[in-house]
Amino acid sequence: MTKEMALKHSGLGIASFVISLVAGVAEFLLTMVAGYIEMSTPGGINADDPIAGIIGLMMIAGIFGALVGVGLGIAVLFQKDRKKVFCILGLIFNSVILIALGGLMVLGMSS
Image (cartoon, rainbow, N blue to C red; front, side, top):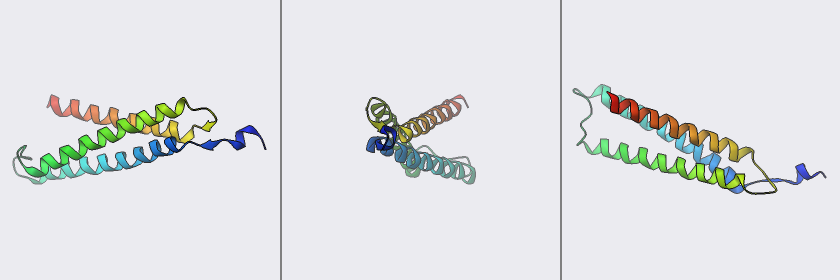
């Protein structure tokens, strides 16, 4: 058996990947819900509406989840004798989520 075949996937790398999938889907759905509410409500969504606050808090929770995923991905990069496929995928996906949400925030503040 070669050394490459003996390597196992890192649990932290798998966790980073799973977090990226969950956070990505959740943030996408929350963005779609917020957009739907904005379009269907006359005058747009009210900032004092409790549903707006809940959506905002859930989006912030998704951002923190993506940050945790990035941290786990970076941690796995320093592990030896582990496969790094899931860690790299999780790191890339979580980074894309953070960049996309940052861009969305900048876009929202500019209008």
